[in-house]
Image 1 (cartoon, rainbow, N blue to C red):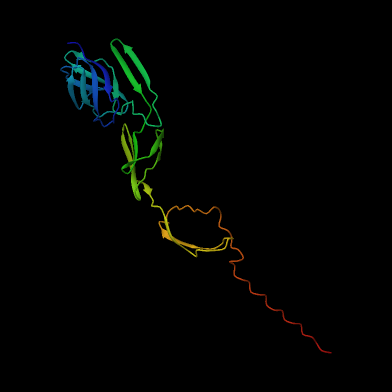
Image 2: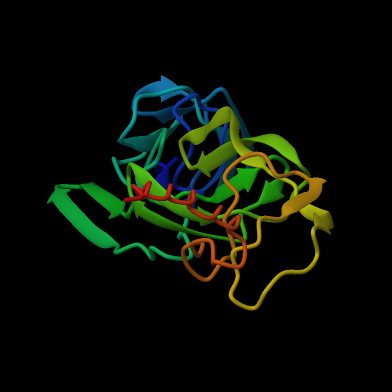
Length: 238
């Protein structure tokens, strides 16, 4: 029986914890006795046909690994690689990956590696996906919050290596309402002090005043009391 060959693996990425179901394609898979990821046996595998195997990746370290299939005819040459966090990752809307391909030949052995950029697959606020997000770098994402209910929610980032979240990281604040103003009138020059009543005024509220509050006008100042009368100078009669 000829030795098996591996020509493709999909998907070619997954978390370091393992558990990713991958489809291995190639030839001469009948009666396969083992499927290895960098020397570690797959958690489970099924020989679907002589040209296809489905396998569950074991736990592993971050980085690319080689996948081999073992049959009575021998072990497949070091060929298509995958990895436990897997080096090729899904494209994010704002950071399409640049893919490079490297091959190293030595007799019947060759190594085929796909490299891509880091890309988060989703950003959620509570149970809702961000309206839009951009992966700025491996340590920063900018996201637009979706609509939500008042209160604190957990923000989660999902990536090929797993997910990370922070509880109560973002708080939805209800919009304020205005129910009354007193007094409801004043001079055109401004300067009237009014009391506004309503709800949800706490927190960082932005004033809609177009500029600084004007100084009080003479109209609103209390009138000055007249100066005291000067005493008369006594006149001496002669």
